[in-house]
Amino acid sequence: EMSGVLNLPLLGLSMAPTRTHAGEHSKFYFMLNVYTSEIEGDPSGEATRFEYSVFVKKEGQESDRPFYMVIEAGSSNASIDPVYGETPAKISTITRDGDVISFQA
Image (cartoon, helix red, strand yellow):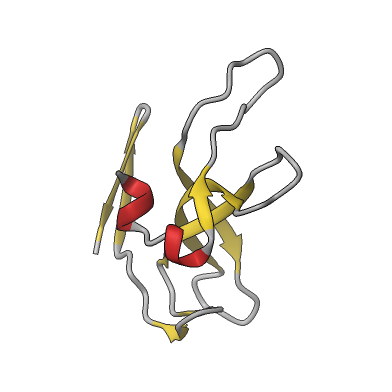
């Protein structure tokens, strides 16, 4: 199970089902978000970033509302990560063919 692979129990967390829109039944999601950000002072002017994420709940949490947890992130430019500090670029090429997005390191 993904919860064990991510060591969530050691962190006092568990995977949490959620809804992405009203009327939907709650379910577990493994999400990929991709977006482009402008970078001031960079000659290229922008960076593409990706984030893999899941929704989690804290042990003993009173609210049913889950938290969004990024489990892996990367960028086409060097960036600052709150856990690892300065990180090198992880993406060199991004292509899109219809609904399929491909990354190459």
